[in-house]
Length: 511
Figure 1 (spheres, one colour):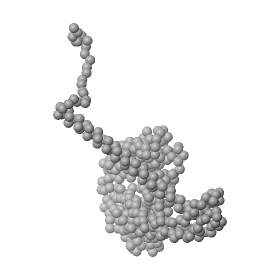
Figure 2: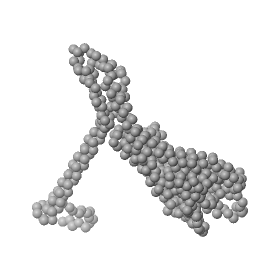
Figure 3: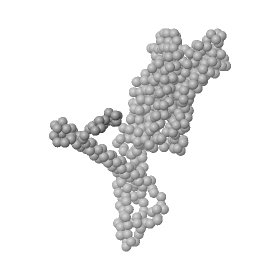
Figure 4: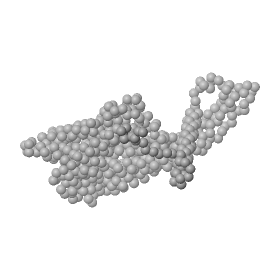
């Protein structure tokens, strides 16, 4: 029901927009085009799921990423309804709700891909099945998870606490680096469009869409806005993108041919050398890497200066993988002939992003870790040199605490006070607030205790598994021994087998 509801509402929205566009354009009587109109609406619904289709002369694969928002929101809502209707016992069972929505939704998408086939256009059924399942699984599962957390009063940030410390830090760093890249790409595209705004206005006037058509044209451009942002990110990374065969838009130069009359394309620079102002965008990946590296190190479970650059570079590699996936989704084919190749090269974008963001993140993580450990050393040194309240020698009998050297980064040594002095301090020690160094040391001790507890638990599990395996081996040996004795016929068998049945009383011979 959740999958069918999401698909039905999505189709209703797309059919409404299609009818509005049909009314705004010159057309024949409604009865003659109703079948084609419905097929076009179904095709638009499949396009909103990023399903490409084949036409007579080629393939149409340059699909708007922003249009995916319509089915994603509907599936998110259906996932929340499913979580309210069916009780989900534990967090790890959320995937069952996601599968319950994704499987029938993929079947609906595949069926509609078959129904939308015509002599002119043929949607890709395998891609409809795949994209329908992926979008429904992610959006529906996210909705079910959000509803479950809301019902139980769990904060969104508490999910990060359930992840392993290192995976959590990488996720935070990757998200920050990717978000910084997308923000830089958005600013670059808006700046380029603002500079060439007169050309965009002229293109809109040349199309003469009217009021209704102009509204639909604006919606189409908003749907293609995420594609334009990804193209701008690829430009800032360096590889750039193509606008057809034998074309390039990159910081090294611009060479494009004739393009369709579309207002957004006015943001493209003119042929020749790239604008000098646009070269400032080359700093975007390094800024994004610095942000990702700092946040990766700040959210790390422990402070190890030697490993900080390594984890910063891993953050850059994961960001490069995300950029490669975005580049693959943003590009595609736009018919036949020279417009068959539009968009960035996904492997080039991923490789360059991994190197640029990774190197910047590694350096930033190392600097952040050095600054953090330096501040901790200074705090510990200040705590060691702080004046201690003198007590009479007959009460404590303790020697004055000498300054203890601080570790070079792998360990932090905190000066300790004698036990007798701590006991005599009484309530004064309880009333004073712990210093930053003491809090840091306590956190380190808590991590050590948790690590030891996990080790002990794993050792106990290994011993239990070993005992269970040994018991099963003994049982198998005993069973094999009984079978061997039974085959040799020696001695009496320990087990007896027989067949019993109930006979008719008349068949029994009674003397």
